[in-house]
Image (cartoon, rainbow, N blue to C red; front, side, top):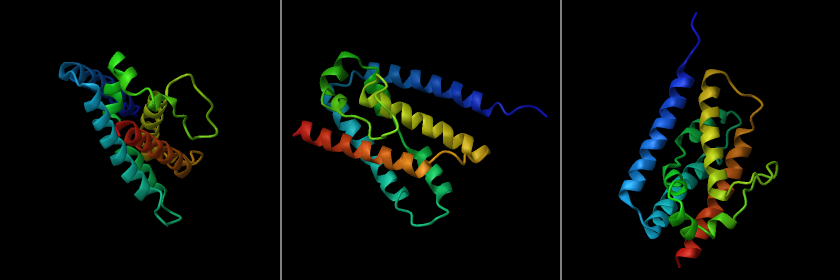
Length: 162
């Protein structure tokens, strides 16, 4: 009868919540060390989810993989990307990392921006998949590449904090 406007509502909610988090991060005036600690925590949490999700030994595990994609968080990355000069200094080593997906060439964005966009896009695809299965999306491969990126991120953060 009427089209489903759930996607439009979610997109509007995403933009509003993104701006709210950016404003909250600016008000908090987080310093570089706090941002590094928070990013390490967020990355380790996402890595734990990805580790479990991609090790599900079941040929019919696609629904669980899609669900895992919806659990990934990027709030700290959003805050860092909105901090400007603070994040540029604190994350110079992180920005030297390259995304692990061999199908994707450099997109002109830094590592954190690329990771952020890929997580947000995957969460949106998971939402679409819940309405109509996306059979051409290689969810397991995407999650494996993302896991590699989070692993590189955690290693770099641990090294730079030492």
